[in-house]
Image (tube, rainbow, N blue to C red):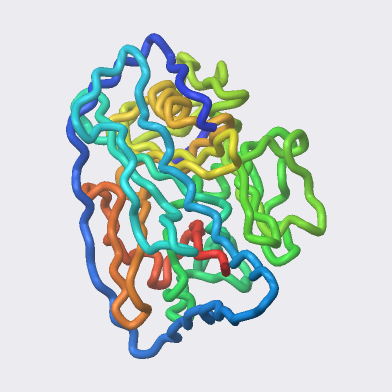
Length: 337
């Protein structure tokens, strides 16, 4: 991005947007082997005893949550595999924590990821140079955390172009703006997408905030700004002045789970419509243009970590955020049982 001027209750979509759905595409994978990394343990099995009194009922485990409903909405024409969620990456507490699917818009794939906030904890990572300063989460996910790493994804515009702030480690590297679209991470690892000052404010419970522009989706519908006749003024200037470009977004659904959408050849109204169709009640645009949009998910032990891309046409390799990077990004980890 060069410059910026400016829940599952289904399914509403802007009538001006026509999405043609084709079969889902596969992900690109790679395996990463660090020199050394910690390994995880397993829980202790429950034992039983014999007694003359009626036995106590054994502890029960809540069944895993079902996959999100298939993404369908007129005037979409669905084909096998389109909009159907598939589990992705490592399981958490015995169940998938991330589901992914692919839809197509004008023949181009659009990747969608759903993240279970009950099984994941989120973190905001500063880059090695953006923002300036020394941070606890700085530049890359360290190998000591690879054993619980579930997903990584790009953040928003460069901070001098984002019309918003950056807060981490009790410090605002860039002041937070009231009204700004905000990804908010709390100290318990939960996260949401909010309008700052209305849906969330700074408190001791807040661990990190990343702002970018204004909300793209609010109250389960695209905001009026999503259809602005001058999208470059509101949603950032794309390469070569072509507003049809790679775009990404982050949202939250009615259950509080987090959604990510990215793909090429997208306009802001289309990006908003896909977010709404996926169940978002609020959503914010993240970065745009081909180089910057990236979502990866992980599985396997830290000594042989396997990484996969949401879309195989994404520019960065699937282990991109495991190595020092100059810009900030977002990561999701398995929540302890």
